Length: 428
Image 1 (cartoon, rainbow, N blue to C red):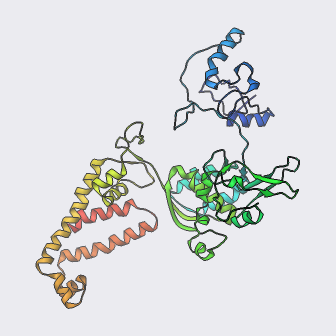
Image 2 (cartoon, one colour; image 1 turned 180 degrees about the horizontal axis):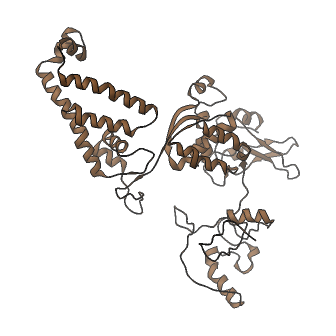
Image 3 (tube, rainbow, N blue to C red; image 1 turned 90 degrees about the vertical axis):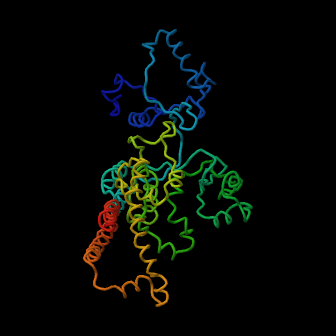
């Protein structure tokens, strides 16, 4: 069969197709009506249908299968070569893709609405809206909602125990669960294994058992705007005040994570975008421009950095180095330089003022006059000096520039302008 994912650059151009063991294979299989065969258990062990390989782990069976092919005269070639292969990021076990039945949300039905709501959001930078996010939405697939694991929000679907009936029921609230469940405790723990003990009564008279799956954790995160107020069951006024959010921010990898789950759930539930503005952050790299990794040993501990340099200098260094939506190289020497040039200059400028203010007992005189220090100084000031006029003229320009850029979620420009003002103008 022909397939578009086969390239001229990789391999021979001939690829085996196993619809039960890969997304591309499955799509091609659906196109040509190929069956989805499963000879492997979820734990990677061959089933009985695999004959002499039954009970073997897939990787342990590889050399035996090769020997059997050679013995049968069907082995064309055997060689070792390096190629990409998936491994568990936790334990480094080799992985294999396997087709599983799953519960889905039919997000493809709302593709146009998702794109429309995405366009209503002020993305910073805007190329995320028209590029990465739009591409994801235009190629949207139905959301695989269920997960086969223990931890997580239980999927609230009960199925009739009678195979001849098979009716399903979705439970939408704790109130409904207590009304329709059999002997549900008032203080029931709504997670596994306790929720699995709850039975419902089907219309046919049989009991109903909850399906074993839990929900994708991204559904939890995307439900945040509603779940935090227990909406729509209560707190309508609080929800209306906070929704949609004025501003959110996260890293660029959340395009297919939190950003999407928020947008998808809000579009399906309320028909609108859940936030108005979003600043998309790029990753912080090491000083050589390489991705930080525990494996490489180049990770900078943020808590140690804050303990050593302080929180404000660390924040200032990051936002003054580059725009948040661009990759930022983190160099401790650069942070030291920011402290020396900006923070020390600001501190010394204030100290210079404070020394002479204390000599003149400004605070005590202001208190005696019942005024603030600022009001007292203004009342005693004569005709401003030329340098004072100069600073008084520069300062409003600075605040206007900062406010205008902050309103556009431009952070680095005003921070750099403030830095220049302190170093070049105020301190002189």
